[in-house]
Length: 117
Image (cartoon, rainbow, N blue to C red; front, side, top):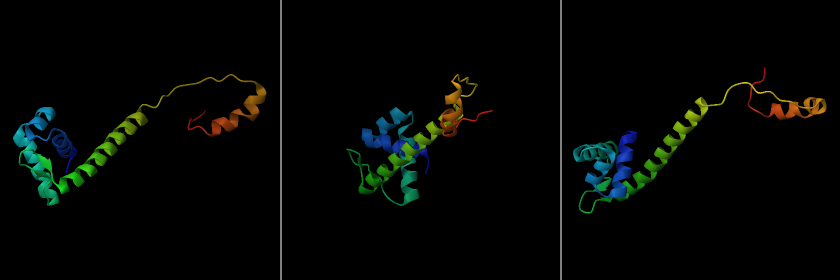
């Protein structure tokens, strides 16, 4: 199972057409069919009733529910990794009074995730 197969199943569920899914995904109709057949073989179940109109089987509906979760998690992971690598860095200068600098600022800074040198 790979993400492309899950995207293909999701697109078929929205378009109810192997041909239209292929157009959206820039795949040939045989490539779309092969991806779904591969998923069905791997999981030992029929996901799509290929009669017209194309519909998801009960197994397909259950599979789609989990595929959507997997795709959301993968998307979230990509975003979080991107955010991690784009953390702002640099120097900051803080001006304050002596009383705040001695009493309040140390507590505030201890809660932050910033490294101070």
